[in-house]
Image (cartoon, rainbow, N blue to C red; front, side):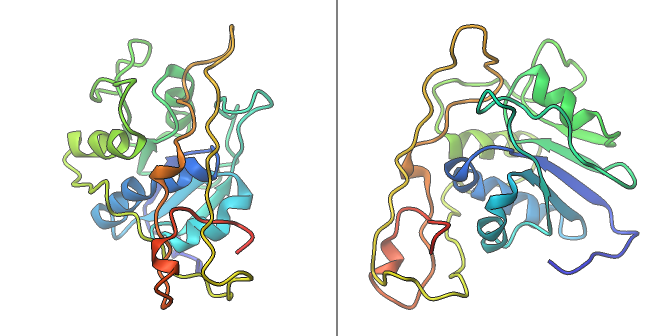
Length: 214
């Protein structure tokens, strides 16, 4: 993304998870883009997901951030510099660890699900059996931000596919948290949450997932 003017307010989004998680979060990211057109949207996510994040059309800047060694746990810190974000959004999890991380940089307003350990965040309740796309759209809708869980389509990547017409599946799903492990972060979503990739090829329009090795 092009460099943003220094006086543009910034919106921090935490989703430092995997490929499937980023794809399942596309509708929520797009909703934030529509609602905050004058903000620089900064996504805290693994650096290797930058090409996919760019194709969402919703992100201005990717702030490299990865889960800790335990896999899907909340990062310990973010390399945030400059003025505090105007708004911070927890699209990572629903517990106090992710809430405290997005709140740590002085945002004027923090959006997230309700948790007893962080009463200042007055979000909706968490539903454990909810589909990831619906979950994050419901979170934003509760704050008055319209979100469509079917707004999934990615732009076509600039590079040609090495396998035209191929269908790429991303079936990964993390196991339940082990004993003693934080439950702040939900398991990774199944491949059915992944969006199609826009293309002029009829076969490509039915792709259920995106591959970084496009």
